[in-house]
Length: 300
Image (cartoon, helix red, strand yellow):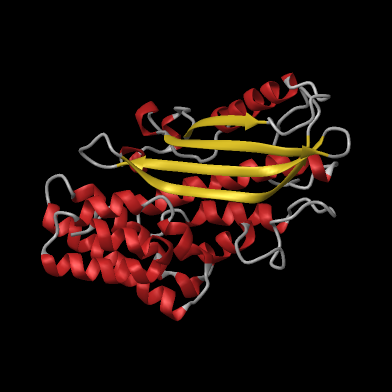
């Protein structure tokens, strides 16, 4: 990718994300003025798209396309909300108009405080802020911004996203604390922000970075002009993922990696050799059990 060679020393400023934010509040009491959510949506969009998250330079065509759907399910104390956050991100495939999914995840533990027009700001050295519930909002979006950027970099360069996963780890280590705030800690479940980040910085799991790189850069990016080689590389990355899953049962990252890829994987292997199809179905049925029947039916 061109931006890998474009350093900030060039003196050019270009933000990394092309984010779309949607705030959905259909379940919130009619007593709440819904205009506040339009304002929040606009402020979060500006926060993600106008902040400089890295020291590298991105051309407009290289910005990472992503979307955030903040689904507010309830309002408790004044200006305090609870809901879910759906995060999706994609990266372009070389020599095509296709966007391959990087992230397709729903965070179920979103709690925050927001007063209309309050500044949406983030300070990495003061993640907790003076109001934990208010700080949790910006911590959430900053965390996912860094995770998206890290995964994008990983897909173009072996372990290229490490410094951004470390920045996300800093947010976790200094995350706001409160009785209604969840998702940041080891004991908040097995599928949360803590564990996603842990799986990507744990050196025991370094093979995951090889899987990400080989799937995208050695696989999808070569489909246009080196299709047999590309398909073999994708199959190899899935073989590595299967081995990882067997050795590290119930880790979050394997499931996270596969989310949003069913149609893509079916398309890749529909034109494969009979032997490759059989291997792909066996592997995918084992590591993506929820979609096993679809792989078996559609990869023929």
